[in-house]
Image (cartoon, rainbow, N blue to C red; front, side, top):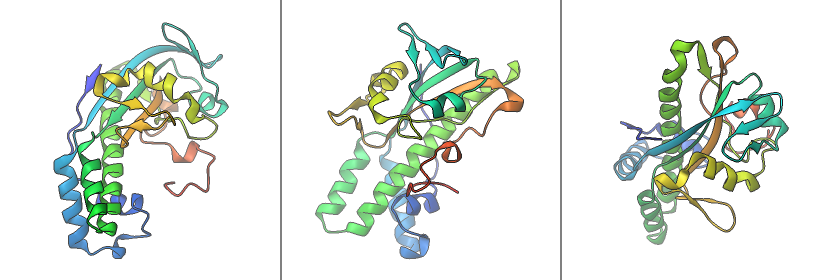
Amino acid sequence: MRYFPRLTAIDEQEAVRYAGAPDKSVYAPAVVAAVCREVLLLIEPAACWEEYGYRADEGLVLSEIAYALPSCDVARHLAGAERVAVLAVTVGEAVESFSRRLFAEGRYSEALLAEGAASAAVEQAADQFCAHLEQRYRKQGLALTSRYSPGYGDWQLAEQPAVLALAKGDSIGISLTSSLMLTPKKSITAIAGWRQAQGAAPRGSNCAACNKLDCTMRKG
């Protein structure tokens, strides 16, 4: 199943943060605004997902070939979930050409900012997509947990091929390199669970649930 998020703006503060700057004062406001506008014109947000039954007591995703979660952290995150959504989101390849061109022209700060803006965009697209998913089950008294991705906590990137296959990420053009990196580069895979609304977590990415406290991209 596919969904196409529509972004009307890129969060400039998040773009600067993903570019590795401590705050927006590192860049002239006009530069930040201009790069974010350019990236907004180039991105092609797309998302896909598959729904599966889930046995929380076993950490078992009931796909055609059952997938046992090898991560204690993600199993805890999905505790009490009745179903799961395995999802993939991308903003496409065009923005990568833009940042490469900026690097080639020696405009290094702008190139890093373009990379940051694209990272912010894929996060925004994923949040919009998860809000769309949540609406599907709200009337049943269920809410969506925050999404959890390979690389968070003890969920190793080695699981990326299985997660991408479960999400059917190839349907929106996402593939993997030999080093298990997603391509297009600005892409996300994740899992989220539906459980009773009072026990649900916020639907964004869940830095609070990840034990990598030294992550440079950590929020909060």
